[in-house]
Image 1 (cartoon, rainbow, N blue to C red):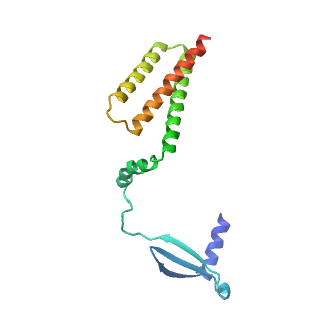
Image 2: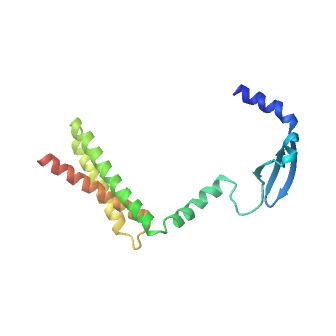
Image 3: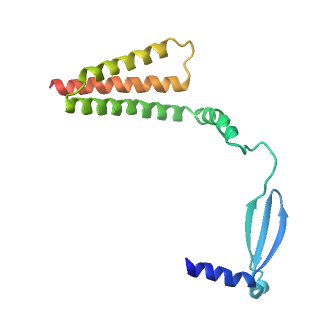
Length: 159
């Protein structure tokens, strides 16, 4: 790294920096005096500070997240993909809970009560809504995967 810094500092004297204004970008053209005959130049573009609808503050970016996610999930294929991911995520969590509490043999009853309360609360929350939004549908898919994982684990233990 030291060689590259010294290389840059020694060669900066031989380069000429000119400024051009182009649309909303500032363009700097860097050219070497020895290569001016061949018209060799590199342009370095930097975004210029402009006023406009682009968010600059953190709160503006946070407020734009729901609209961005709504636009992202408009495609049915993306909705199906994330529905499947939440279903498999629930299955994974159920297998993990069953494995960890079953292997230890401690607090099995408390873990079972918490699992039943979780599924019942999500079921009540889902079916009490008049309109089902996409995040609530994802929560219900997670619950279905969770319940399926617990049933599969119960069948494994029974055999």
